[in-house]
Length: 360
Image (cartoon, rainbow, N blue to C red; front, side, top):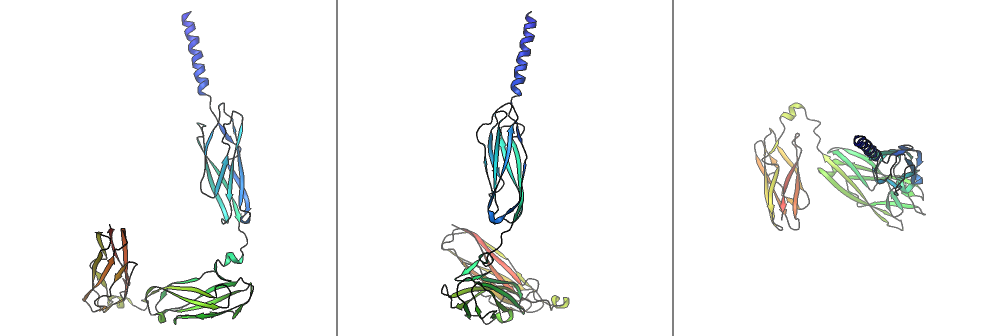
């Protein structure tokens, strides 16, 4: 009798444990993908809803919802969801400024032991809005709007003549006439229209003569437009270029006879200095080539000065040096300055020297 009672009690306890172990929340989504289809950029934010049901036998909790990027914002059911109950997760995608297809993830965290982390997907395609003149010409100078106020000619060979264009638009209510002032001699500027009427597009054609610029490396220049605009009649425009040497004429035989520059060191670490110290160092170099080496330009970065070499024209085997001075005043912490050296060595026409260290 006692044995039978013990068996029955054990069975009841086992059933109770099994019953307890089987009590759990289970989340089931109607769909894990929400397709917005095509939405218009002009409409801004678009909403989508994911619905789910607790098909388990214990209370379901959604503890966190994390969009994959800032362009999706999510709200969700935060109250406990009893067995058989439903909830929702709202996803908002801001289409403004994001034309084209998109595919984003939303991570949902729950107390469902089998689905502690679930990834939902929103997708679609944003059709771009029609661009206004303000969109097409974002650089506003008075009533003249420009697509850009800076023409960058990138790499120009020293003999090149290149053409580029400033595009502009009259957003005002009266016609505007344009003249050029402070125009550098190496630039030629032509205005497409002598008078630009309201709501009219026009262009300024710029011709850049690198040979006339007579410089090397990165160069930056500016000039003014003088107009009869009531708002900012003087309009400042910028032109830059990186002028490089032309070695295309050299044959293999020419290159074997070319000059070659060799620095003892191309970097100097002063390790530690105190605020206010002047750091001085000389970068020594030699012409190891077979013809005359020319130092065409040296240019130091901000906060550092570099003297011209003792010799800028070096015959075969000759040596020289570039002395740099770095004033550490007001420059605490790790410092890294550069000196750009431009030469007629076809293999090393541009060398960047480095000076670095810590200012206490």
